[in-house]
Length: 490
Image (cartoon, rainbow, N blue to C red; front, side, top):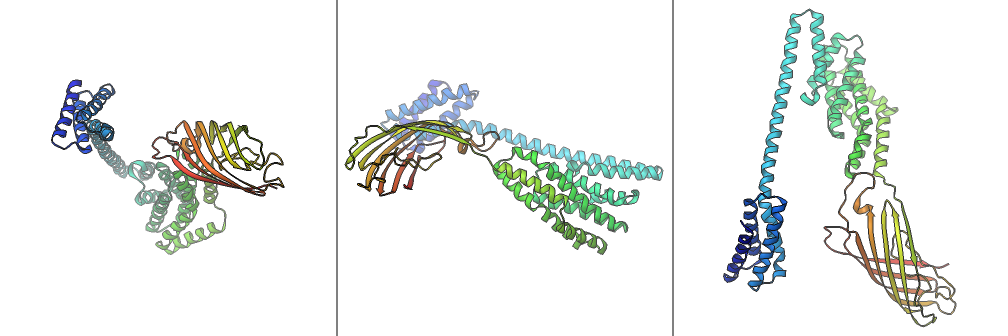
């Protein structure tokens, strides 16, 4: 569709809508949307093509509205939203196609992983069958190696009780030092499984339970080494969790604040969850394993364990990352001008100011002024909003009504304005040296305020009503707030 065709189509359809009495915002939106959608779908859809299409469509819509004697300003929102919707019709279809392709790729990847896992299982089964035909020593070694491969391939097979049972059974049959071997199996399985994905308290509980349950069941089914296996499984799982906890510090560098807070909460409960999990495994185990696990839980509660030590250090690191030291050096210079000098009468003054802030909280330059009119205006440098470096504005000399013995009362009104050129605002830009949530700030912000001040002897009370312009893109309205300051001169 050519440029003229888009324009002619929109103008004509707006004219028809006028003639049929259907010239509503909804109808205008529909006319522009369909015209833009058709034009974009016929073109290449690149930025070079879209910009002129939208430009021509909006110009034509305004022209058509004016020709139809409709309010263009009132309908411009419908025109713009229709143009954007028209572009999206085409682009949304493209996005849906890509999204569908991604789903198909993900499904294919999942299917290939299943095939790969099955192929590895078949290979290990073939090795086991071969081992049955070989001398017993070699066959036993093959079974032990197969169990070890399964444990090291949890990203492929997932960690299951059965995988742990097979590895522990091999340790019982072939190892001279069962407790240490089982402890190593439990540690490796726990650590590897936890490091595969995001560290959470719930995953710790599930993985520890699988490891300890699988190990104890293997020993009870074998009918031997139950005590050593239970002991080794408890120690190994605990050390595996501790090792995974130790690596959390580096990973949290990419976490946002909410992720850090959740991680901190998880770390604070890890040891308690682990001991509760060991207690649950103990309850459904035989008497020998139960006695060992209960004793280990009680001893761990009374002493400082490796897990408590590691979680304590990790929690401190995360807590430090949750903190953000703020530093801002703020300077402001004021001048008091046009003061009439008549004490005890209606007075007027003007107080211009210039300032700047430098730091990781704020960096800006500002300028403004305050004008005051009233009875016994105080001899000071005006009213400051409640903010960093806001001055209490103490009296400058003995003529101030707060100090003068002749006059102890003052009442005045004032108007103030301040403009800031903002380079950095941590509350909008986020952290200075690490990634965090942020919004697109406005680089120029103004405060406009009016207020009233009251002085009774040494007390001064001021109220300021302030309008602050928008501070970031997307902010719906200007801010309106009040600031009250109360001071006492001594």
